[in-house]
Length: 591
Image 1 (tube, helix red, strand yellow):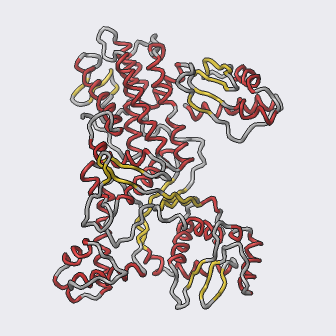
Image 2: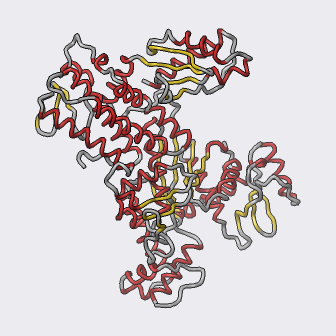
Image 3: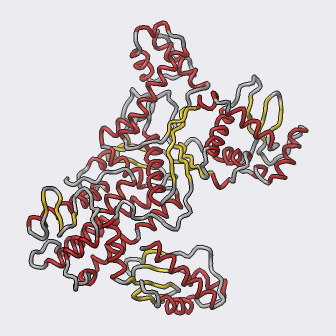
C-alpha cells in the first residue's frame, strides 16, 4: 500500500508544483509523523522548497495540503508550522494494507516499482588459517541480512565467501603446522595460536611424512570446514564459496592484466608492473601514455587512491592486489551490475584502491560499495572480558554463540550501524526479560500465538489440531498466510465494516506502523545497514504492549470486535516474524 500511495502522492505533489511554477528537489521526504502530532505521516516538502522559490513555507504547506486533500487515501491533510503537511490516512486504506500483510506476509515489502539489480555481496571471507572470530560474525550477520532484505525488495542478490587459499599466508600456515607437528618452534612470522598445535596433532599418522604444502592443504580444508559449520550454525548461507585458486587456474590474473594494459592503466617501473591510479604524474614514458589514456577515458586518474600500486613484483610474482582486481572483474563478468564488499575494521585503506581499480577496469565507480564494520568489545555487565586464551588473542564466534545463542548475536549485531563500535554485553544477551531487546520482540510473537490459542478455547473461532480457523480460513502460530477475503467473509457479517471496528489510538498506531514496513526496507537498502529494521521491530513490539493492555482481544461477548482485533494481531505477528527472519532471528511460538 505505501509504495503505490507514495507514487500517487509524488505525482500529485509534482503536478501541484508544476501548476504553481515551483521547483522541487529530486527526492520528496515522507516520514512517520512524530508521536506528539495527531497525524500518520508528515511531508517536509514546503520547507524544502520555500527558500529556492522565495515563498513562505507555511503558505506553501497550506496550498499543498488543500491539493492533497483530494486523494482518496487521505482523510485529513493539514498544514503545520513552520511548513509541514501532516497526513491522516483513511481507516479503509490501513485495513486493506493489513489484509495484504495477513494474506501474503512472505512478500509484503516488495517494491513493484523497483528497477531490480543483480547484486553480489561478498562478506566474511576470512583466511582459512584460523577459526572464525567474533568480528567475522558481525560481518556475517550484516551480509546475510542485507542479502535477505535486498531479495525481499525484489533484487537478485547473491552471497559469496572469498577463500584466500593461495599465497604467502598459506605457505606460512603450512610451515607453522609442519613445525608444530614435530614439536618445533613456529617461525617468527608464522601462526602461533594454540589451535595450530591442536590441528597439527589431529592429523593422521601418515602426516609425519607430509611436507609443508601437504600440511597447508589439509589444514586449510579442515579450518574451512569449521568456517562453513560456524556460518551454518549462525544462520548464514552463501551461494558460492569462491576460491582464489580458481582465479589462478583459469588465468584470470593474466586476462585482467591484459585488460588494464589495453586501457592504458599499466606502466613499468623499477622492474615491476604498476597500476597507475594516483593523480600525481609519473616520469616514465609509459606512465605518461597511461595518463593520456586515463584522461581520454575519464576514469581512475581522479581516484581517491593517493599512490600507484604494484601488480607484478620484481620477481615476477603477482601481487595480492592483482588477484583482488581479477576477482572483482570476475564478478562483473558473471553479470553482476552492483558489487558490495563487507570488510573488517583494518581494511579502510583497501577501499580507495579498490574503487580506483574498478574505474581502471572501465566499470562505474558507483557500482562498487564497500562497508567497513567496526570492532566488537565484549562485556559481562560492566566488566570487559576475553572468552578464551587458547584461541590465540581473539574471541571465537562459536564461543559466543554457545554462550548466548544465535538469535541474541544476530539481533545485537543488527541493532548498530556497521561504522560504529559495538559493546556486546553477554549478560544482557542471556536475560529473559524486557531488558533484552531480542527477547522483548520474540515475546510479543509468542504472546500473540497464545492469544490465538485462548481465542480457540473461548470459541471465538473453530479450529482443528494446531490449525485454528475463522470459518474456512486458517490462522496458525507458525504461518499467518490466510486469505483475507475468506477470513473476512466468514468472520464478519457482510454488512459489517471491520475497519470501522478498529477505532482506538493504540490500534491505529499499530496499523500505521505496519504500513511503514516497506519504507523501512528501502531505508536499509539506502544505508546498507539492517539497523533500521531491527529498531523498527523493537518499536512495533513496543506499540503492541499498550494495545494489549487497553484493548480486550478475546471477548466472547463481542465476536465482531474480537475477530477484528485478532486480525490486527495476526498482522503484527506476521510482521514481527518476517522482520526477525530478515535479520536471521527466529520467532518462537512459546517462551
